[in-house]
Image (cartoon, rainbow, N blue to C red; front, side, top):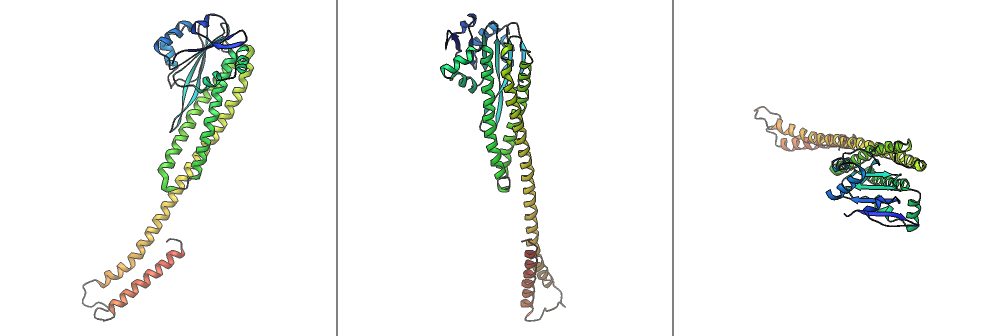
Length: 318
C-alpha cells in the first residue's frame, strides 16, 4: 500500500507527501505492509537501518519504548481477529515533537489508523492542533478501543461456552472453542501488560522526543488498560472453571454409563448362569427328566431378571 500522509496546514488537515516531513508542520505519515523501498525512505529519516525496523514489525516483538537519534520509538500491540483466535501484532510509531513528525508502520491492516483518518474535519483539526504527541495519543486510544471490542466478543463466546459446558456429546467442539478463547485471552493479556509498561514509560517522560505537556492524557490509557486486564482475568477464570465443570460432567456421565452397562450385564448374567447349570451334561441333574423342567427353569430366569431390574431401577442404576 502506498505511503499516506496527513498534515496540518493553516487551520485544516489536508493530504500531504512524504517530503512534508521536512516542513516542520504537524505531519503524520502512515504505511501499511511497507515495501523495501518504503522502508528505505523511512530508514533515512529516522536513522535506523531497514533490518532493525523489520525486526520491530515481527509478530513476536513485545511492546517497548526507546529513543534513537531524532525520534522516540514506540512499539504497541494491536489485536488481529481471526476465525479461531485473536492474535496480537505490533504497530511501530516514530515520533518527534521537535520536528512535528509522526511515522506509523504496520505489517497488518490497522483499524485504529483508519478510524483516526476517518475523523471529521473539525475533529482531525482539534487532534493535530494540539501537537503531534496528541495524534499519537489518539492512535493509541483507538488501539485500546479495539481491545474493548475484542474482549466484548470474547465475552459472548465465553457465555456460549458456559451454555454448552454440560453437552458432553459435543465435547470436541466445546473444548476446541474453549481452547481458542483461552489462547486469545492469554495473547491479549500478554500484549496489554506490555502496552501498560509502554504507557508507564511515556508518563515517566522516557520518550525524549514527546511533548511533556501532553503526557497527562496517557493516564486515561493506563486506566483503560487496567480495566481490560481485569476483564480478561475474569473471563480467563470463567473459562478455566468451565473446563473443569465440563470435564467433571464428562466423568460423571461416564460413571453413569458404566453403572448402567454393568446393570444390564447383571440382568443377562443370572439367566445365563441358570441356563449354564441346566446345560451341564450330568446324569443325575435336578429336573432333568421332569416334563415341566424347561418351563420351571424359564420361569426362574424371568423372575430373576424381573427382581434384578426392579432392584436396579429402585437404585437408579437403570
